[in-house]
Length: 64
Image 1 (cartoon, rainbow, N blue to C red):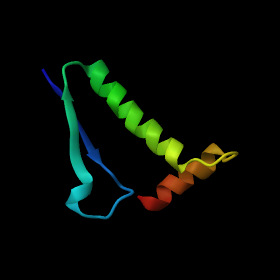
Image 2 (image 1 turned 90 degrees about the vertical axis):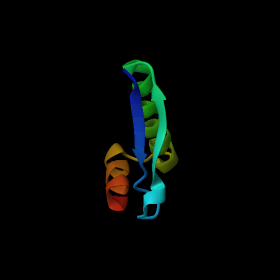
Image 3 (image 1 turned 45 degrees about the vertical axis):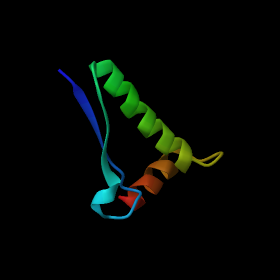
């Protein structure tokens, strides 16, 4: 069984170009690691030094 990672980037324009397949992986663990990196990268990009987790949460909520 293959595990497909699909991305729906809510920070981009609201068109279909921001929905894409990141890849297919042989194991659940590989797919989960890719998903975790996507989320972690997005959070690092949005987070400012000294920012509270609640501020980051509401920052991300504003764009969805």
